[in-house]
Length: 187
View 1: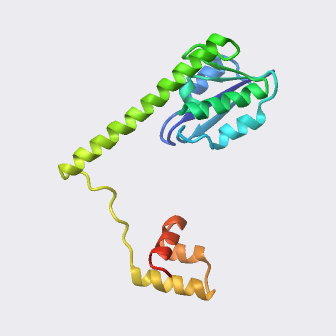
View 2: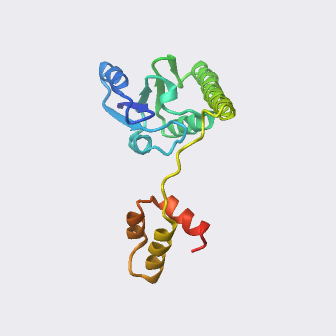
View 3: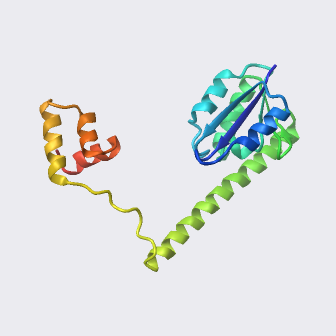
């Protein structure tokens, strides 16, 4: 029976030290740390933690929003815990899914977290709309692009004299943009 900590910060610039310190104080046996958004459950360390946990383990987080940002993802993860007979505890919200009260609290808090995220996104969209109307927001700057050079690189790629990766490197393009441009120009 191990105590497993899971920490998450949204970006590489953020620091997970506060969360890890809590796990150290609780003598966690193992800690998994992701540095990416919680909006997607396909996080490398979350998946590693889900593969690692065994019956009788307890997963702890400093707050449930570190585990998931949507109710659906949270319940899918908690359901996997239940299937593996793993307990879940959130330090900040002080709930424990081994009790009916803990399950109810989890449902309420998860709904509030999802609502909060949706409100943030809505306010962000409204702010961008206002800034656009005032001429203060023009979006991302276009990345410089030489169409003639692109057509030459694609022709060389299509002839088999270079790989698509080589063409992308010459154009300093990522795959998604490269293939989008190939489709756009019907090359």
